[in-house]
Image (tube, rainbow, N blue to C red; front, side):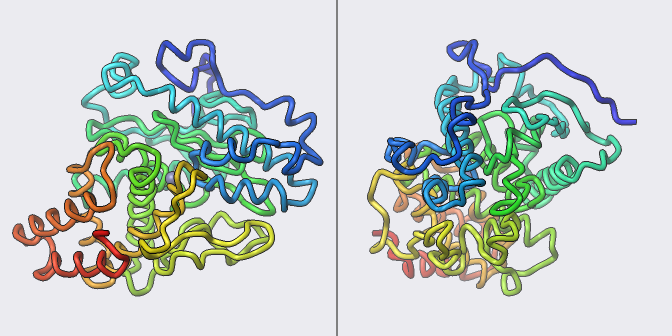
Length: 394
Ligand SMILES: [Zn+2]
């Protein structure tokens, strides 16, 4: 039997300065959402760059204007909630001491999964649905989140030698059915949160291995390089999540680099946009082009790098540049060998690392792994060539 039980409401953050804050339903938007457009949101510039979830803020901004009226409330709520989650996360810069004190990163854990039902409220960890080793719940989102988080965890353990997000067996907390029609998935610094989408434009985010692995990988980056979530370090943060997300998906599907679709987010497209994706690592800039989402803005070369303020300085945009390099390397040496190089580099990068720094570190990692016979001879040259094709180092 699954043990269902209510637990006391938990704040999304564990640091004292956020006491009293919690995620909550954006009531005023619920009341006024329908009919809200660009002008009534008013501060599109402010909205842009504040969201940190699977769906880039550039897409949500576009949807606010382009979505049909019946969908617009869900979009506006998703923008607002993503913004609040981002603010909560920004407030969580408490350092490892605070997190350990809060008991979230106790060493010697077993990387156990806990799935919570948010009951369509804007509050995580409401109802425990499934724990490690427990029986299936019959709920698609809960059972898939459980399964995919396990596959991502096992990939990190078996292929990369990492024990969960913090390498100390940290629990994997998964929240499903978050909010009403919430169009996003989020790593908030301590846990994963998945919306159900509106069912037309986006479907359930927890039902995609790509998405679950991508969000879990944000946790791994936080506990390694901890790349700042803005500008080039932010684009690298997104890039590493795409790299791990796609490597884990290919591994679980038994695909090699030549057979993979190299798309990110295609599994969450609802019936309205079936066939589209959010990003394409093989050909950045080609993932989508339609009136609802706009056009994929990702560049695949440094000469086209985005330099504006939206999307935290283009974190979901400029990630296309290193994404293309990873694709090129994986096509030469295989995705599993390539992801080993990238994971080695991630552990040697730092908070403010730029693209040029990262190229240098990835080349160095490839040399070390080749010397140790973990990657084929010629890998450093393949890596240099792949970055040269996208204009790096610049
Ligand atoms: Zn992300």
